[in-house]
Amino acid sequence: MSKLFDLTGKVAVALGGNSTLGGSIAKGFAEHGAKVAIVGRNMESAEEITNEIKQAGGEAKSFQADVSDLATVEKVAQEIEDWAGGWDILLNAPGMNSTTPFLDLATEEWDKIMDVNLRGVVFATQIFAKKMVEQDRGGSIINISSVSSTTPLSKVFTYSASKAAMNNVTQFLAREFAPNNIRVNAIIPGFFPAEQNRKILSEERVNQIMGHTPMNRFGDPEELQGAAIYLASDKASGYVTGTFIRVDGGFGGMTI
Image (cartoon, rainbow, N blue to C red; front, top):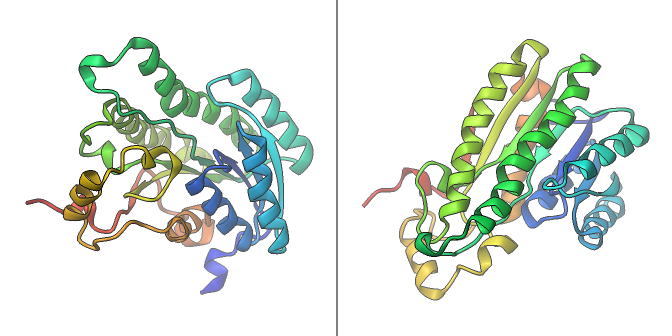
């Protein structure tokens, strides 16, 4: 069975690989044999993830780019190609959130969040997917969505809208790249202790979340690794594309 999830010989690019969730998934890729490019705006946190991978015996390198500045993404794509010769797996894990109420929302804030969560991810994917098509060896693109993509959450209007759009993009690109044997899927995480959602986790908010989460707890970032490794592996999920895997403690199946 272990051969199904062996990523030896694969190169993974983790956009947002310096984040809590992206970093955990990147470490999972490395533990299963992939060579991993950790890409993020903050080089200090990227280096931290890279060093953890190396200390565990894996191979990784840190790169700096901001998906809201596509010139930096073009540059980093070339740097990664020079380092690894190409890539087989693309993880899209950048994310930006805000608790601004809808009636107080300014266009500047909307644009800033969309530039990262939607526009940036879409056009960064375009940059990396072009190379995957040219390589002609297939591959896997994994988007990090959110439970707010299917049922909008209160207090995070713009984030919810961006993730709903990302689901649509996932299915569109799955159809677009199927002839190239490039699979495109998304993971829908529930509530994890990620930096971007800590600021809205008041005691009242935590109680609301737990009341809607059958498993009655937050997720551990390592619990995303299994879904990501499954989607990254050609042998395990070679016929899986355009789908969403929930890792949410039952949140998506809960009603009153």
